[in-house]
Image 1: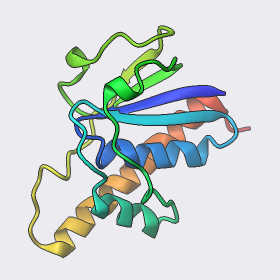
Image 2: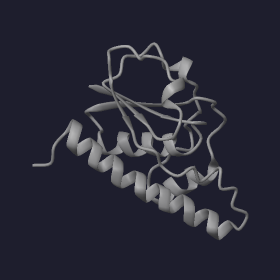
Image 3: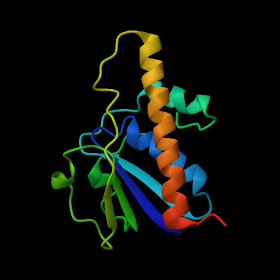
Image 4: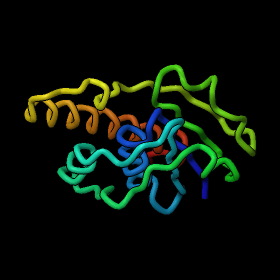
Amino acid sequence: MKRILVVSQRNSCRSQMAEGWLSYYGRGEVVVDSAGVMPTELDMFAANAMTEAIIDISSYKAKGIPQVSDNEYKYVLILASDIKQVLPVFKGNPRVYEYPFPDVVALELKEEEKKKKAYAELRDELENFCFDFIHQKIKPLM
């Protein structure tokens, strides 16, 4: 089993969604963790958007980097801008990839429909990214 760590700013949205997708597409081949530089709590708009896609992340808990730093990872995926420089050196010399995705939480959208749309778009972008990552790095399509 290959281990993947997904890192974002708060571990409330992007990294949690990506953890759900990577676990789904990589089932049986990967163990996926997510963590944040300054963890808060799971964003329920993110959880609801994922539920609409049949992936339940509602039980996921936000974690900080210290909670996962003892694990050895094959890959570390950084989904937020400007956090790579504050991350520790991870055990096992993992391959580190930076793929910044929009921070929909920071947009502070007030209209619920616009907010739902932004989360759904992020969910779909992350699904495509995770599908491609798994099939390029973990288990190639035949």
